[in-house]
Each structure stands twice: as structure tokens, then as C-alpha cells.
Length: 177
Length: 227
Image (cartoon, rainbow over all chains, first blue to last red; front, side):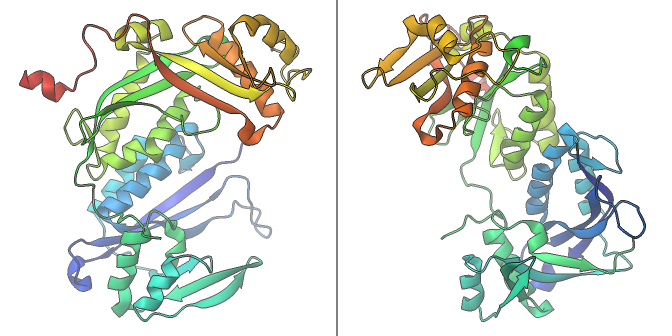
């Protein structure tokens, strides 16, 4: 049966003071891939970085618990080994406790949702624009947030974080394989 | 749409005051592995206590493997412990400790009969479905004790409540009976195979026993200490 493998984890820390907010924010990037998907050129398992969790400490831990449930059945295997959901949550908790921005790589606040998603109405109300892009044959609304709009960005995650999965809120680039 | 603010914990959290795992017989499903009915009692801010069968919001019977119980907890209740939205016996608990507590509960499961004696309610699989699409249907499973739905109907005819002029039925299977969990599984598979959609309803309910509530009903530890 197919399952997801995770290889590396890192956290970007956004201090509350820099946002004018009360809580620090975090972007948890995870390098992972499916056990049965291989790169056509190298023959090795495909793996890539994506945003696994995003938001305040509480939001990240809630997302981690939700994801961790898949460890119990073996559908999610960190380092290719079985682990308990408890161990997975502890791993993310430790990552939050030691969060320093990685030496290489960065994250981008780039929201991608379906064109009729209610979050887009809120974007317009704070003066942010979005564009419609074709992705995998489907129309998708895409909005980018400059650094000075991160308070708006994390404010939206506070309200819509349960509705939009973490990897649709942001992207990571330049992290080492 | 006005979304819920995912940053803030609810001002008045729920309080989990009791957990139980009912171990079903080995022949309950075709897999032959251990299956559980997991129940959590919650004391709400309104002071009402409700018993929730984990997985009961799904359209199928919540006869869960151990990994399914843990996964369901992670999707909801364990997640709510992170910000104190769900307390245990009035105390904050980490999701790790909450899951550990449930593992202990799963490690000492009770039979449906003992569960009923302890809590004054018994688990029952309740089926409501039209008859015509089911009659004559063959079982999908070679292990089924009922080759056709008609065999199952003959076995339970005296307990079926026929409705709408014998066009539909309701059957309540008391899971304390030794073969009831198995028969509930195969009846569910007949209903699913017929693809009846909203015309059929399958639920697991906790019904009061004839004896009523036990002498020592479920009480929050918080109150017991205060007494």
C-alpha cells in the first residue's frame, strides 16, 4: 500500500514583534514524497519541499496532531519508519521550540484557492489583489503577500486556517535536498 | 461565510470525563482483527453530559480498528486539547498525553455486556432501509453466514419492524448478543451493495438498559472531589 515518506523538517520563525501581533508565527517546511512515485530520470523516489504547517504555535500543533493521525496506520512514515502520532507531534513541538530560520532557503506567502473561495472577498476588502491562473487544468486564484502585508496574511490564517490546507497558503524555495 | 477563528480556544471548553472501548467479537468483520466501539463522555459548558461514539458521524457502523480510533482522535478530540478546547477531568492535557490515555483505554477494553452494566446503556446497530432492493441480493462475502439477504431477513423476521406496508424495515441489533456484531456487519454490506443512498440509514446508538443507570453513574472527577 502506498504511503507518504518524510525526510527533512525545518521551521521559519516570524517574531510577533515584526508583525505587530501578539503571537509568533511559524512556517513548517517538510521534504517528503510518496513511497511509490519515482523520478523518471534518476529512478529514485520523488521528494520535494512543501509547507506542512503554518500559523501560530497553537495552529501549527493542531495541524501537526491532525497530520500525525496517519502515522498510526503507517500511511505517514518519517524517515521511512513507523512511528506513533505522539512521537510525530513531539518532533514538531521540538521544531517549534528550536525554531531558527534555516541558513538556506526561504518561504513565500502565496495563497492558492479555488476562484469562489470566501477568503478572496476578504483579500479585496484589505486592498489586496489576486489573479486567476490555470493549474493542472483547473482555474485557481493566486494572491501574493509582500512582507509588509504579512500581518494581513496571518490574520487570514487565523480566520480561514481550518478551511484551507497549509500548503495552499505558502511555498518554500531553495531548501537543500 | 463567517469562519471560526482558529487562533482562539473556545471560552468555555468541553470536558471529557470518561472513556470506554468495547471490544467486539473476532468474527465481527472479514478481517478477523480486533474491532472496537469507542465512546467518550463529554461534560459541556451547559452542564449537559453527552456520550459520543467515535466515528458515528460516518455513514457506516463505527466498528473501528485500533489505528482508526487513534486517527479519529487526532482529527478532532486530540486536536482540540492543544488549545484547551477539550479538557480531561477538568485539566489541561497535551495531545500526546491524551492519546496515551486512550491507548490505556484501548488496552483494557470491555465487552458490550459489561459496558452496559457499567454505564446503563448498551450499543445497538440500528438499520432503516427499503426492502425491495435488498431482497434476493447475494452476499459479497464468501464468509457471510447469510448467502442472501433473504436468509438474514428470515433469521430476524420476528424482530424486524416493517413499515410502509412491508416496503421498508427497521432492525435494532443489540450488540450484547454474541452474533449481533457479525450480523450487523453483513447486513451493512447488503445495504451498501444495494447503493440505497439516503433511503437507508445505519446508526450505532447507545440505548438505555432495562436496569437503567448504574448505582454509580458517570460523574466528573471534579464533582466527586468536591463532594
